[in-house]
Image (cartoon, rainbow, N blue to C red):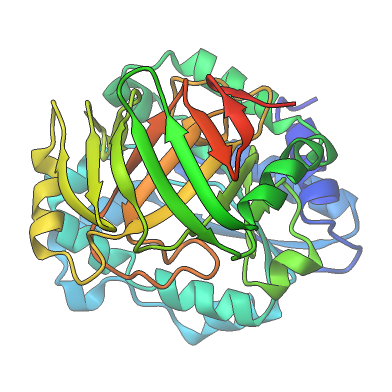
Length: 364
């Protein structure tokens, strides 16, 4: 029995609800091949038609290092036709060594991944049901860069991936309902965080681990596995106060620590970090309009996810706030080149007088 058997079966049956004779693309990098192989087998066992798409990491780095930007990020019609014909998609992310992006240059990496927005546009149009398997992020190189115990990280991801989507949906229903109302949201924490913004009745999203018809209708085609978050785009011009994050933000193998954001009259007037803030400074300097606006707010819902890894955002009771770019959130229109955000682990969140998170714990 493969250690990935339960993961693959749950994603196929519950997240993507794959039917016999459906076409499914499974994409991975070298380190994710054992996971992808189990998905291919279980898809065949379910009567589906899998196709494996493989990205060789040494060839990627060689290409980025030696080829001009114009020859990177090119997708042929044969691959687009495969996306057009697919019903579902499983992605085991890469690369394994995230630090190579800094070494070879963000501009070259951005050129290599320049097809992403086109891929998502086409996948959304085709109502492709997708699953992004976070276990692909748990590599030796990334664990070393961020100072993680790799075995503990992998164990947490597998455990959190086993939570039934119905449990996450049950936990998130109240949060989603309150975030979808018009009104006022306040966030506070013992570290000096005092922040507020307005909700304007935009329907909050919830990633419960199922790609439903309702998700496809609003363009939310990819579920993360493990899942577990409710998110909303508030009035981007309403943010007031200060947020002092108690978790760092990951940036290409480094931690940006001690991040604080200060909003005044709806604008991010000051941001700072006690360590590695310079990594974000260039994006801030060149950021387009929208860099100083509130992006989105996210509440964690997964009861088995644990803080301290790259998946803080889904841990039950975690509060994540971002400024700047929010185009990856359904309905988000802020396309600024700048984005900054991180997590609060002991925050209290109140919406229209109702507490939804208290001291880092979801309210009953």
